[in-house]
Image 1 (cartoon, rainbow, N blue to C red):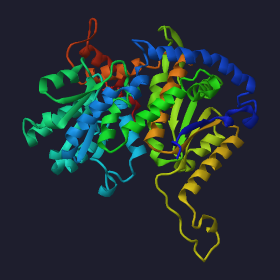
Image 2: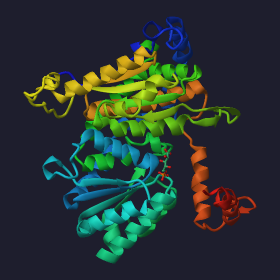
Image 3: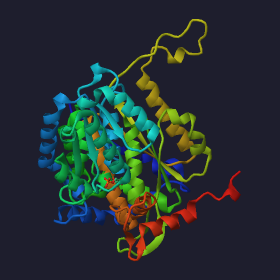
Length: 479
Ligand code: PA5
């Protein structure tokens, strides 16, 4: 049987389908091809440069990383019933997305459906959630591995979780437990977490140089939990490598990432500044969450590639889920402002299936739902929503999955990462930094009483005073 694939379907963005006022005309599409084509060669060249800004594109071929991940997993898997990932943002969302996409819905609950440890990704510091989790974990603590992931090693949320876990392991299981049960994934040489690894003797994996969090899912960041939980990481990387070849194609009309980015860019410039990704598949729902971070953090920028101030740029990504959100969002999507581009994710062959039963004799109202496959209903709901949106002249893209497996998920990840690179180039911004996130991180340090200087002549204490002057509750406005 042929290898399952994903494909981008883009007919329903054209003026022929939704009219000139909202659709893309053939001439406009040709202009987009002219604008985007040179970027393909530019991105291909960038990929090969020694100090490339896109080293993420080489990850699918990094056998060294794959081997390290497999060796580490082989070392710890037999003694591990529960794997806990500590991380946030790009150090967590890929792990969650892979697990939701590629393992069964009841993976953590049903031993029959598990081919590895239970997986929990703790990507917040909500005390109630953590208290409940660690309360549950108590008896199983000795057979738990903690994978703490932080590229910088200085992210407060992840660092605070690590401090708690160190204390817990040491108090409950003795001084050597951390060395046995903590695996740190961080920068190879620099950063606080690397220092802790070296001084306290934890095992570790590497976040490759210059690969930012949201582009790191195909490094040890995402691969370790995937490998532990029985996901075929070879197929995942093979799918990504296959897509990387497709998105390197210098013929615009055969390059799905270039077309995807060009269409997104075009609609943004015409006032459709919101991008809704709507999978009709629960397996893909967290892939849409992963995409949301990738798109938002990469493209929301106020300076161009040279650092000059520009008119602020930023398509707003929204995650929706079909059919669930038909009953929550579609009223807005059809009758609200026509300011959105929709990207559906549709699956041909699902990884499980059930059929409804016979209709009750007392009424013929439900006959049309009798003895049908749920996949038929779900996929027809996608068509129904798409049709309804097209009636209101809303542009729609679809990513068609032959099926959701490691190979097609690898393709999807690569497609959207490279689409983001193309979009960054079209907007003339740097999609690989996140300066605006840094301010919040530094402000947290200040409020948490970090000592020392924040900026020249300005201590963290001064900074905390400034923050409080803007954020302390003013009773006058409290009702
Ligand atoms: O994409 C990014 O760069 C961010 O979302 C980071 O992944 C996130 O802030 C966590 O950073 P770190 O891995 O350094 O703890």
